[in-house]
Length: 212
Ligand code: ATP
Image (cartoon, rainbow, N blue to C red):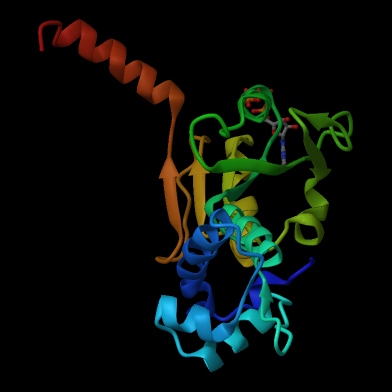
């Protein structure tokens, strides 16, 4: 079941949770198959639309049989679960970057670092925390289209040029751990975290406003 999800129209994708909920109920009541007419009645979508939607999932109903409930359910599970996870690329596998790769974020939310880049030959090709490190020269080649967020943990002087390349490759949001102020188009979101500044500011507040 290898479906290219970028080919599923948005209108169809929006109906997925509706179909999914109904099919789950059918499944728990022990039903193996369902016709588009039954589905149509239950979810209030006309059966021609349902047939067209399902054809995108590779589910071709058979006349007189309908659709296989198990097949549809496993498709929906896969698709909807994937939708919830945001894949992140990490650039710069130094001390901080390495810590992020080990930590990854799967325990507390639905983001996962799925790929990393560096220029250090000793790191290229290694796997850290289960994430493969590629050479930055191969960014354009290896950064998958579904990675839309990047974490920047590189030296400040290379941050802007890497940012430009990330944006050209389709990155929409950057968590910037470098001290560099990045210039980006309006539609790109940058969150800037300078750990040294944060720590300094904490110490300053403790010293000067100890009781607030
Ligand atoms: P950190 O700042 O994360 O503690 P560090 O002190 O180990 O890291 P830095 O010099 O800050 O090292 O570099 C962070 C990482 O970025 C290193 O692994 C380095 O190899 C990598 N790096 C340096 N230049 C580039 C670049 N142009 N592209 C990608 N990675 C780079």
